[in-house]
Amino acid sequence: MHLLEPVLLLQFLVSGLLAGALYALLACGLNLVFGVMRVINLAHAELMLAGAFLTYVLYAWAGIHPLLAFFLVLPALFGAGFYLQRLVVERVVGKGELQSLLLTYGLSIILINTGLLIFASDFKAIPELQGALIVGDIAISKPRTAAALLAIALTLGVYHFLKHARLGKAIRAVAEHPDVAMLCGIDVVRMRMFTFGLAAAMAGAAGVMLTMIYSFSPETGADFILKCFAIIIIGGMGNFIGALYGGLLLGVAEIFVAGFVSSQWAEAVAYVLLILILLIRPTGLKGAADVT
View 1: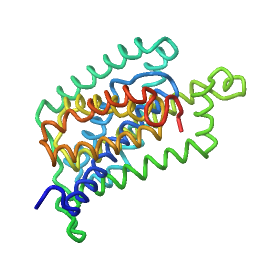
View 2: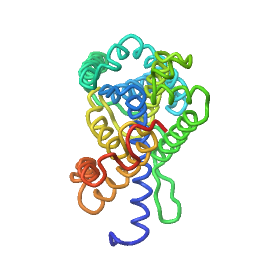
View 3: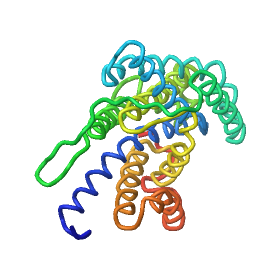
């Protein structure tokens, strides 16, 4: 089959969008934290892996399917993020991005080594929901489809919550003018705790989906966090919907490069896109610092 045949191009496009949905979910959570608190969370991918390993434990010990574990992992990661913000991250809010980088980098190292102590460096996998759906001449991976649908639904759900819910509007107010929000009676610290918990839950959800697609270890997060940073710069630092666009764009670009060139070159796509965006539109596709 020739690479320029429409069927193959459509296959690449569908596969890219499915891959990009997972990137987008993870990057949106990271961008949400930055947009509200101006904190760069280097431990965000490790929170994703916490969700992945919790899913693995529920599957291995209790036989719970990853799609059902989803409803247990989200509240668990939300609670962990909620109190992690209050006890640790809140100490560096408003004190500059370097402090947040150092703190969250240390937190990342702690989480990685905790994972290595508990699970060792062996790769884990959950052999569920395998195979592909055949739609016409297009083969669509079942686990990637399930993961993408959940990722898109959760991402759009959080976007709708931030845009229309009263609590979401309070979070946006804290992101735009924390001092004014405080004067209006909004509990700014609690909104930050809720925001970090929400971002951790999104990372945990990405971890659940990760288990259905990839094998993973406690050290898997490095590649994902680098791609996430590229995505949020491509979409716009602090811009929630920009991260969604950036994640989908990266997923499609990686698949096309892997198909037309090689899988090795596909790993460099995020950084090539990052450089191009910085040269053409430094504020990103959707502009900077807009939570919604």
